[in-house]
Image 1 (cartoon, rainbow, N blue to C red):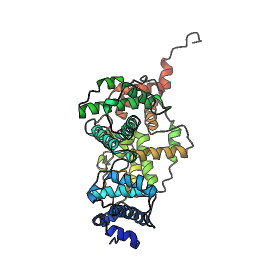
Image 2: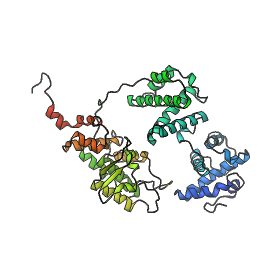
Image 3: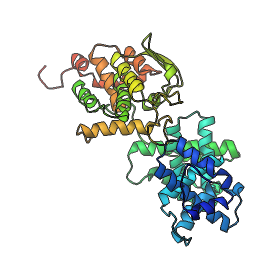
Length: 419
């Protein structure tokens, strides 16, 4: 039946006699094409065979197979499973196998952070994130963050019951923002407030609900513009960071090229993963940034070290059979898919760890360091704004506080001190 995967007679019979039989071959091909190892494919197919047996015993049609049903199987059936052995019962493997099955069946899968939530919360958060994408035009990482916040809000206020906005009070709104999460920093509470206002506007637009009073009740978190001092790395520290890469594996070459994009030209993590092969102009030595935070496109010079790092990755590590036009792709299953911003953050964090730095975090530290390097080399604030692609020079003004040489030239003596 399944030539790609040798199965024991029992799980093979379960698949043959189930409503999933027409999709079994395609499921195996999908996993093999995605680059999964043979043992992983075999394990996932056995997980699907277990699910198929469960569907058969309950006479559930394939049209009813969706994310809700898969979550019910994982959360409700597995802990009390009495199906005949040998079958896999590992939640992680079964969940991953069923998510791939939903893709093959053409069923829209909800994000992992919603798997344990009731249908009402799943549907509401999915509608909200679609609104953030189609109406607000927010990036995927921002939609993910705001979706998790609204999931927590709905779970805290309504639990597993229906979502009834008439039950929502001003006290509920204020309590959520001021206590999300417990012990959070002011910046986290600020994001929670922005997200909650966005969600209430979504409810007003989609359901014509009167939520003006609730929107006005969302507390503003105190935060003063330009109050913080950007953290930066010295030129020596940047060199140590870049030298921490070993260049032994394909992933090393890829991560090194991504970090050079961050440290040399100040790209954001989202801009790095969006680079396409067609954006690189090797003859002119330029890189096209098609979509930035300001939703504008730019063509910027590509420094020689950065270009060499990208070229080495493409020539030596990137698979020639890759069909994706994205420069930076996955090397492990599911292979050849474009990377997400999370992988960029992981590469930078791993480099910090190799350098023995425990207090540094985030990719924006490298972007701040580019601004510091430009200011110390004598570049004007307008030139720094152009390199970092700031829409307003006021955004770049915060970097004047790290230009200590210029500040020393204009600083006045402290009152009562010797001049």
